[in-house]
Image (cartoon, rainbow, N blue to C red; front, side, top):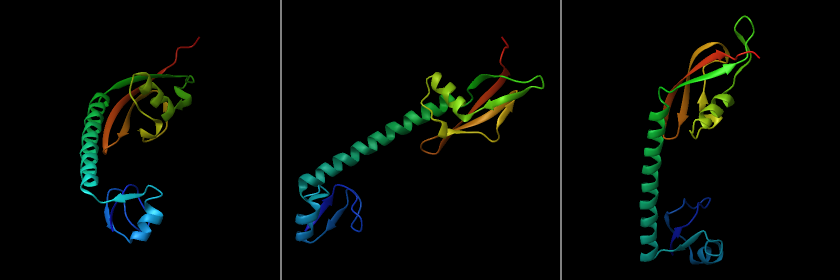
Length: 150
């Protein structure tokens, strides 16, 4: 009996694959759990429509990510930090703080996407890489300045 898998089934196949299984396995295991349906022309059309919708969504996501990368690339941000008289920061600038500043500017960035080469504990300029989906990256310039006292 030919069936279309509606979900990943261990030791059988992945979602949307067409498999030939015994009628008992299909009726007693796959169908009651909603893991498969009988292969019909309607099922094939549904699968094709789902594939087209997934491809359109993937293209849309790629375009959005490329736009985000273009906006982020070369962006300059100034972050204030409490420093000692030597110009060394007390706590440094964390990845979370950089992500929070970017979120505050309207970018959808999480701290796991922010990559720094070394801890930021001194005043100056630093290059920070933002890892984005689809293997895209953007480089943001961070300028760390002394926080005004008072």
